[in-house]
Length: 201
Image: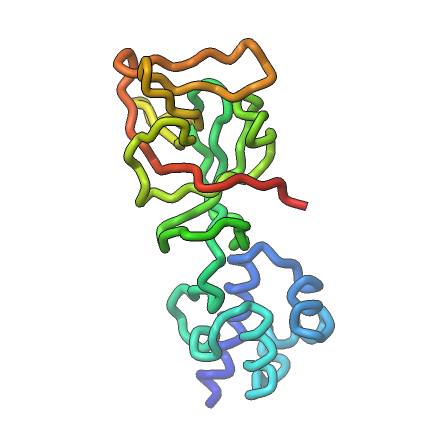
């Protein structure tokens, strides 16, 4: 039992860090106080069944996932990872960092779907600067009038609307400085189709 009591608090700390929550945030979700969470993480308080149930609910994972040392998958299948940033403008190096799990207001997503924060105003008519866009990599075939996250041969990314005649990636911007990218001049790969966009509160 001593081995278990040592392993579980470390798991609690790791799960909290993975989500970027403070002690107070986890405490609020678990209906307790930050000092109690700190005691659990430092093995100063025994993690009994009651605590396991409360913390699993707070993390939105199963109780067995709380006890496991494997990376946890959310119990809610509609949560997707927010994995970084993408340029809504000129090609720019993507910024990758797992930030959080979010609940996208989008239906019909594959399990591979993820969210990105946009930086720039080349798509501000549909995706505001700093907004979130939900990308589904299982939908990578270019279709007229759909928005795609794409990557060039230098590993830089951007997000644009596809137009087929002539084939181009087009901005949807209130800023006239942004110009279409003609297909054929630059090699690129499609990361995935944008399935929705929203502004975080």
